[in-house]
Amino acid sequence: MKIFKHLRSDWFRYGFETLAVIVGILAAFALESWNEGRQFENQTFAFLQHIESNINEDREELRSLINHLDLTIERAESLITSFKMTSFDAYEASVNTGWMNVEKSFQVNRSGIDALINSGRLDLLSPDLAYDLQQYYALCDELAEREAISNAFIQSRYEPYHFEHYTETTRLSEYSGIREKYLDDPRGQVLVSEEDIVNDYKLEILILVRLVHSEAEKLIYHQLIDASLELQASIKQLLS
Image 1 (cartoon, rainbow, N blue to C red):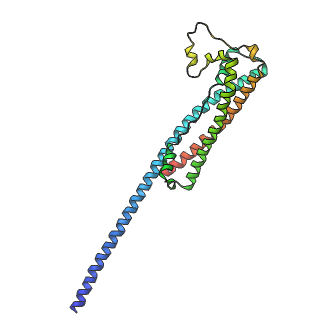
Image 2: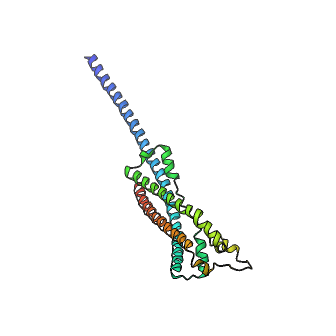
Image 3: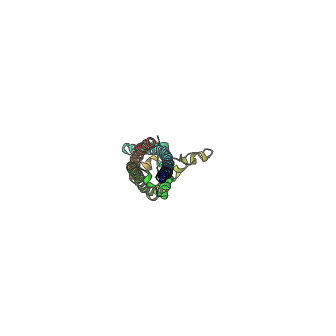
């Protein structure tokens, strides 16, 4: 009888010790899982905050580019109207034709999404957010192609023609402080000849193409701003 009592007490002791070991192992697994979950969450937050910062910077640049395009479109339309009316203000025409030489390009910020891709942790993103980001950067690539077409036209067609026939207006350029460099020029301003420009059909078509390119770019700029706002709202919801 004593032997059975002893064995039974040992069973209880061994059972308790075994249970304690199992509980300890389960607790260790739970703690490790919790730590991994926290690490996963911290990684996700860090990448999303980086991407959100990039998108904010993108939107500020896009708004600046839209302001530039608004002025380009306004001046191109003014010149086209003057061609239609066969009447030009020499000073206004000189400034506006010179402005058409200015090139602009959007520089998208990809450091956040590149860091995420290089980490191999795209799985941190939900499928919907991953798709939205893919669409956003695809639209950035589309804009880059559109700008490349416009800037190539300026470099190869508009700028050479303008410099050959209306080079004097370069001194009136509002870009890069060129005009300020000639404020003390005793020779005064040299303006385009209304008689020359009124029948310059090639210049008219070149300006018309600049107008069309600018309107196409502006449309994509606005699409990108809308996409950036939607992305930011989705990211903020996840971060909260």
